[in-house]
Image (cartoon, rainbow, N blue to C red; front, top):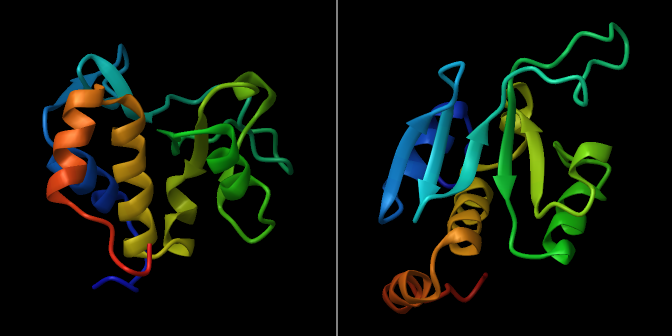
Length: 141
């Protein structure tokens, strides 16, 4: 299962599986996963900052995922083979964007780590430490 391509349902399942998570819906019904009132995975509505370069049409499948640091963000968005990106609107914001249509370019294991890191970036220190103590890193992480 770990090396298979990720799918949108994985984003939902992984985010919902983290502790203390609350699923809310934005004004247009878009899912937003929060921990302690802070969003860590957010399904965006079409916005003018994320558009198809050929048609100018707004992407309807953009997912925003928090990251732990600017270095984490750069690692994801600077790789030309990565489906993760950012826009000027998110300069200085600790998050990356990914289109649902491109999630298959990420394996399930990598998506799991990214979602868990997003949760850790937004969880309280106490909750993060509790989770980390019961989920020690694997030798390959």
